[in-house]
Structure formats: structure tokens, C-alpha cells
Image (cartoon, rainbow, N blue to C red; front, side, top):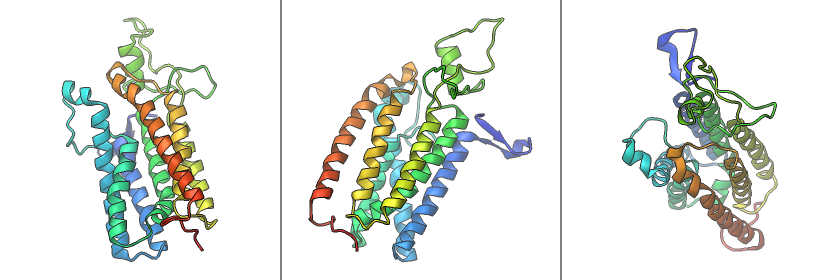
Length: 277
């Protein structure tokens, strides 16, 4: 695990881990999204427009929510909301942004909105899982200290290392300079595994001819429950205090909305919930 990935030790082939996997995540998610839409019998033009719209909505929404939850970082540390670098994103803001812009395009195309949402769950999971690999290499989104045998340590220069030996000044003296962080929960791996499990669940359920929207709402609810639990294992610096306060409340609101919508789809025979043939 290293914030920098070097191929064959060449400087020209050295990449920032997070940015590299962010680019791979967008590419992988777009590819799965496009192929899923084409399989749903959308034309090449429709699939391309919808894929690009969904990705644009994700990046915009993710940055906006990150700004709303971490305004102090933008004011005090000079973060730029219009920065195009692959950092400072909030996952659920991206999902909301994709749902809003993508949903609008789906309606304009006169396609089945919730059916499209169902088939795109695997693409979302692929994107999340790939991003979490980047977080793991980068050392961000790290967990709390643990003595469990699968606890992991991050190298000098990583956010986890900086938190332990700069913010907390733990075990740090002139004569004792640690080379790694303390062992922490591999919260990035937890989330990667959760995304993989939900992707497989979505693929299975999409073959069952369930009501439109059932798969998307069920998988979204399951992932949000997991995120809430995983949030409790995350470590946050003092600069992220506002994020720490608002994130669990945001998850509760999302879970309530998802549960209500899921139950409505399950029991309703209304528009958009017709069982697929």
C-alpha cells in the first residue's frame, strides 16, 4: 500500500494511487453502465448519452455534498469546489446527482426509470469497489485502531500515518520515528467486499422478474445499512468534525427514505412498479 504506484521504477510511470484508481473506477463504471444499457436494448446513442450524463451527475453531486459537509476545509484550507482533481468527493452526493440527471434523461427518453435503476446497480458497485482499492493504496478513509489479526498498517506519508504521528503525536520522538501507522480496521476492504456482495445480489435478483425498482431499493438499503456500521469503524481528524457529526444523520434519513420507497414498491401495483415479464 503506497500513495504512489510506480511501474518498473520509472518516474514517468509513477502515478498517484487515489487518482489512478478514481480514473479506473469511472472507466469501469461507465463501461458496465453502457453494456448494461445496450443489453436493455437502448440504442448506442441513448446508451452513450445516458452513461455520460450519469457520470457527470455523479462527479457534480459528489463534489457538492462534500462541500456542504466540509465547508470549513474549503474556507480555512483553500479547497476549491471547482477543482477538477480526483479528490474531495462524497459518495452519496454522487449517487443523488446521478439519479437526478440520469433520471431526467431516462424520462425524456421515455424509458422505464426504475427498471434502468435496477440494471445499473452492478455498475455502481464496480465503481465503488474500484475507488475503495484507491483509498486502500492511498491510506485515506482509514479505520480506527484495532488489535484484530486483519488490522493493516499504512506507510509514512499516508493520511493514516499523518493522523497517528502528527495530529495525535503518538509514540513520536526524535529518537523514535515510526515507519508505519498503527494497525487499523481495513474499512476500505470492508466496503470493497460489501460492494462485491451487493453486486452479486443485484445480478441474481435482476434475473428474478421482480417489480421495477425492487432491486435498486433493496440493494441501496443494504449498502446504506453497511455504510452506517462501517462509519462507526472509521477514524476522523479534527478537520473532519462536521463530517463526523452529519454523516450518520444523513444515513438515517437515506435509510428511512429507501425503506419507505421499498415498501411502496413491494406492496403497490402503481406506475413504475409493474412486475417484469
